[in-house]
Image 1 (cartoon, rainbow over the protein chains, first blue to last red):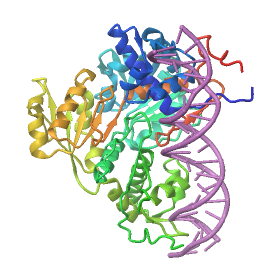
Image 2: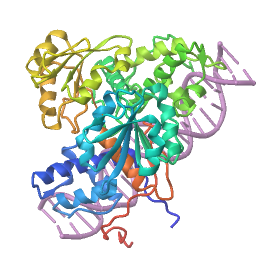
Image 3: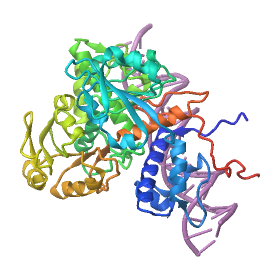
Image 4: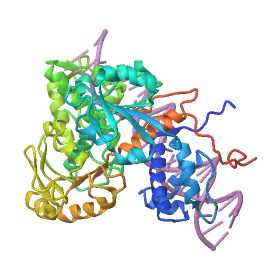
Length: 243
Length: 243
DNA sequence: CATTGTGAAGTGATTCACAGCA
DNA sequence: TGCTGTGAATCACTTCACAATG
């Protein structure tokens, strides 16, 4: 009983979401069964990784056969928590905010966008498809009365922390942050950052150090690693300790 | 000599990009020096992590004092490879594509968008700010003649692999993929995936398993980990081996 | 003497090797 | 026989502990 449950890493959670997506496609194509080998191949991971990821949550396969596409899909829905609807709001109706307002993939997974918020009078009280854009003043109001689960922050870096604080005071339960800055949140609020310029910089690093030994820059799914570093321009390195 | 260089993980590269961003802000605010402690605090990591990350590339600090903001910022620019200009194209001018076309942060870091591509006649030959939108037919042409470094894929999942293949045949050097599917690329082409729905699903997982022991869902920077898992609905788990 | 830089230890994630089972 | 499930081994990343030093 004192034995603690296995630690589920974010890498594992992300892979589970990828497996789920693969299974939805397989299901649409009426595939009945799938092996860990095939599931792995379609997501560029190893089959033992698939089996290990699943093993944290139960045993879902038939030895000698594989997994039922429909069953495993539904199990993953339950594990990930997308067997229910989550309510979202999007704060900041710029380009990224608008992209989210009609992001079909999210809708399909059961993320329901309840409203957008902005301070620009030209955007406020407009509609974007079925979604109302409200003035930022009404943030606390809506979060409180509608019991919003997830707040998506797509405001400029300069106001991101302020918006984040307001969301949390209003009772939001999780945050998805697109602003290019690390937000401070209490430890019980899960937060994820999506940062396009950091990803471009990772590519820049790989292109700069592509030298002899090019290598995959990580298929988003695991942490990835590589050899060889930028040489220090700083001449002080490598003299190091002379022992 | 046979000793291989240190392995630089993607986590480290991403943190370096965060440190660089922090230093640019400090530089604008005319801060002259900064300690690893402070740099860590502003990025929600530990100070020893900052020093370890930097140590892979040289020694940049003064003991008892800290780092020069200006110098470390420039060293990081060089290490990350953003002390030069990289050329990009954006394939698929939907909401996300448009968001990228006027993504100021990227421009500022020296990522220059050369053109956008689409097949929709209403978008083709339009302009978006200073950036031309061309027909997808001209993709190979432009990548070849302009020597484009990075291709950003923002087309629907169904055509993403096709676009990716064309980019690679045309000689692209790296790919940033926003399509919700893992792309197959040769191992010498670095690729990064940005996948909003996966991040929402990670939040869903944490909200679903928030039980007693809520915990940070990873501040984007490290992998993060947590206790406790979804109980298998599948009754077959936990009988396990009875030893 | 505050703060950096770094081997070594500790922690966590992936892969191996194979037992278990349909 | 073929494929799953998993403890043990390996590999990678983070943190500790402390020596080095401006």
